[in-house]
Length: 223
Image 1 (spheres, rainbow, N blue to C red):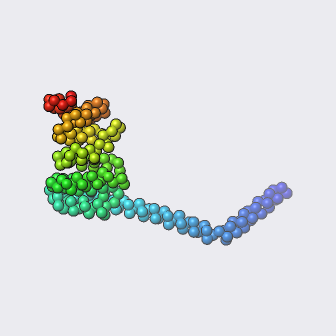
Image 2: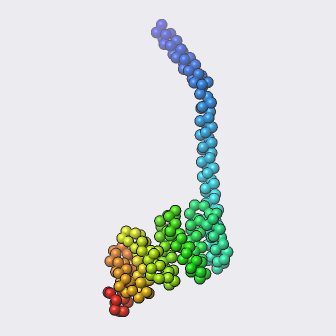
Image 3: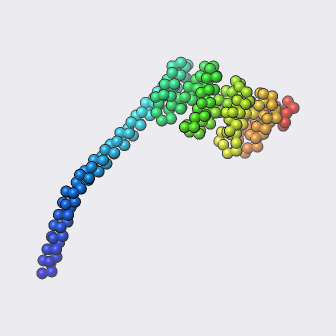
């Protein structure tokens, strides 16, 4: 008798669950279907977006590499045109990389003023990664050593010549050379002294600083 009751109760419970699920489905089927369709649509959209990013970045990369090859082969006019076009139409990091390379082509072609202006603009563009901005500032500063004043060089890179900045060694070197060329031996000795005193200075930069300090001492400047 107990087994019969258990069987009966189980069958009743199953019927109740079935009726409950049917009622739930009838009431919420449109919501469930909408959620399911939404999940499928979002998944498809994300995959489509990922595919678009990958293919667009690949196309920008192909254009960038082609322009680099033109620059290496001496076809600088075509390379410059492609880099400048990529600045406007490229994807991801390629626009700023193209801008950097275009400035390099300008410098190589002797258009130093335009190259300095391009590097300086990148260095001041806060939307770009810090490493890119610092590299651009340094490029502008080294061009300004021969094409500007100490103040021009300082305006570009003195902000980098501080303890802890990864670009400080090159910034100090640019400042020291510029001061030396301007005849300010005291200022030059200070920058090269900072280089020599920094235990993290790369060997090549440190060696050049020591040489410059010797030259400053030979000219009667601060040793």
